[in-house]
Amino acid sequence: MAHALSGYDGQCAHIHGHTYILYVTVQGRPETDPASPKYGMVLDFSELKQTVHRLIIDRLDHALLLRYDAPLAKELQAAYKKIVQTPYQPTCENMVLDFAAILQSALPGHVVLHSIRLHETATSYAEWVNE
Ligand SMILES: [Zn+2]
Image (cartoon, rainbow, N blue to C red):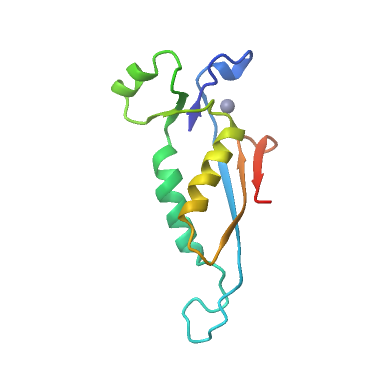
């Protein structure tokens, strides 16, 4: 995914991309019914992956994120399909808050979103922890 930080006083003001890595951690109690196909699971990994893909990855993979008032945002959106205009500066920190809100409302009632970590690089990341 690519982004640019409008008005930023450094290199990230330019359109550039990252191979983001997203970690999502949920909390809950494992299923205790031996007759359940989900016996021993807090949440089926495949269900979590589907939710994350549907709500975040499918929309943002290979997209360019721009703040809604970035120069040429509307023109770029008309010319390219995957331009996502955000109501916030698309920093790693703001994306983590956005993703947390999206996932909290989408998870099944028996699990709680515990944390989200979004890496821009191997050593640069933002993390949200449910407290
Ligand atoms: Zn960046």
